[in-house]
Image 1 (tube, rainbow, N blue to C red):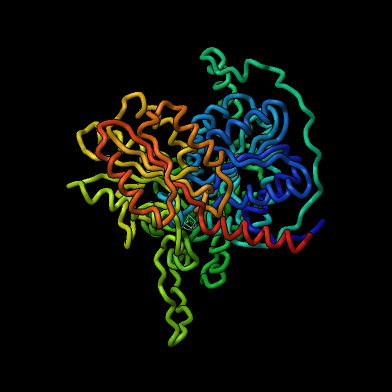
Image 2 (spheres, rainbow, N blue to C red):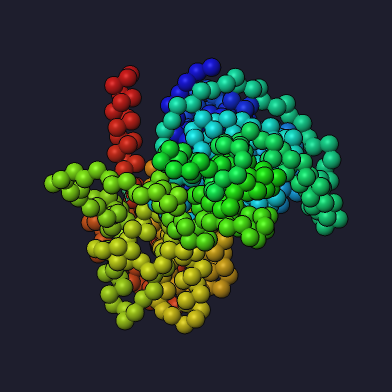
Length: 539
Ligand code: SF4
């Protein structure tokens, strides 16, 4: 047994490797990115397991599903909003009688540190009727990942591992176990189980429902769900999930009265345990990071006379990240006075593009081009360039979800608004802009698509894009964009005025135009130079 200090994300990656992982797939997204970063470093050093970035979360999921089809263990990781993109294969994979273990690690972002919403992926696991494990520590992240693969093969379903930012991005000591060998290659005994034609799908859905009893029994008996505290009747029962357990334990010593504590780490909700615990209390307080999933489910399980408190009832705020202070307040304890460092005021730093970022020069050119028009609409997408919404640029007007900018500009143009402009990064375009552009080509929509090509996935730390710039341009033309209204421009500040002229011409063009502004992210350019200097020093 060895000890390591790992991020929650890294503990998941190492747990998967030690569980006999054959392949892993992901699209970068904070706070899940470090799972794949760790696996790729491991692959470089050890030659296995296969670890790859993909065009988006849906393709990542489908590739992992292919690994599971041939009997091997696969991990697919993403952030919570990425699961929306992968929702189609995710929901259907619950029906196919998974062959090799398939684990879906989803990192939620309560408090929206770097996301456009707070959605709670436990609802997706419940929706798909699959087991979910929710670690409270880095050690549990490692151990639960290992168990999740075993469970997946035992119940022939994908298993979700739900993380939150605070766990994914914090370090803890992890004791590791033995490395299990990879599964041998083998195809499923029942091929029809994977062919979701209606007649097979109906049978598979029934099989999934039939497995629910065994899955519920597992959750009830799972050591991840456990009861602590005195026997007999108490005033208060506390139910915690995930890292809420840590916040509760931190404060429990100050409670005047003893409480009974049920921690839920394995779902579906262990209803028998919940009933036993609730029968011993007059009030039940639910502490969970995310949505009121457990709180809502309790309302259908417990006698209506029992008081259930939590996010929905107002004892805990309905939004934002859970904190030890919020838990303290919900327990009826005085919030401790924090430490005040007199005279120390930290400077505020609003998020902004790096000094010299190519996107700044691209936005400058776009603003010069738009100056000749009475009104403009600029729909944007998700990446570093979204920071162009803030001063001094104030260059974009929307950011909804990956790939939405192109469809939104198309809709605005078809509603009669001109010029309609969509701004998207190279990686986001490959993630989910391609299909929207097919719609625009088909309709020859009167709009301009601006692709900001910085040759990397900048916002998540500089992961490689799926194809380099030269091939991206060929892909755009291959979709049928008119070559006369397709331009590839150098986003260097020296070119700003010339670029603005091209953009202005295309904004006035009554049809579809695509302008690609290319210049490498300065952060990745710097990292490359440092790496080259280091390798010269080594040779
Ligand atoms: S990381 Fe790169 S793309 Fe992102 S703001 Fe900085 S320079 Fe621009």
